[in-house]
Length: 127
Image (cartoon, rainbow, N blue to C red):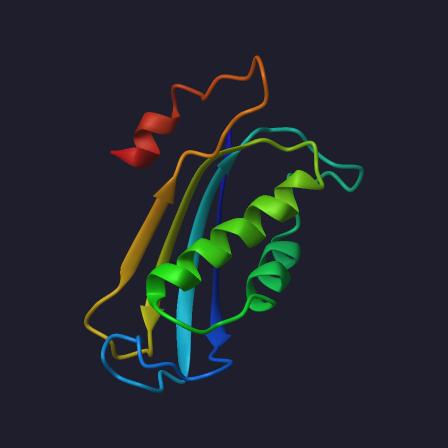
């Protein structure tokens, strides 16, 4: 099992009233943690982190942190759907603005293909 980390910045597309009671967050930082199978593509990667970043930065960055989190998750799942790599575990930390004292984590155990089991080592990531 591999664990990939990717961090980046999302620029707000449109300011909305449900951004933590403050209209107008200029940007968000994200940190995704992805546990996946050891299946390598033709270039000997599990998945290209730039594909993950591009998919995330192409989402619509509006609304609440909860809405943005779900869009990020869907974008990451779509990238993995184009590969033979299985995503076992997903975690994303989303922080509005750099000096924010609050952040939101979103953790998912994505559905697995038939006959595939989550690795036991996953417990070290979750704990």
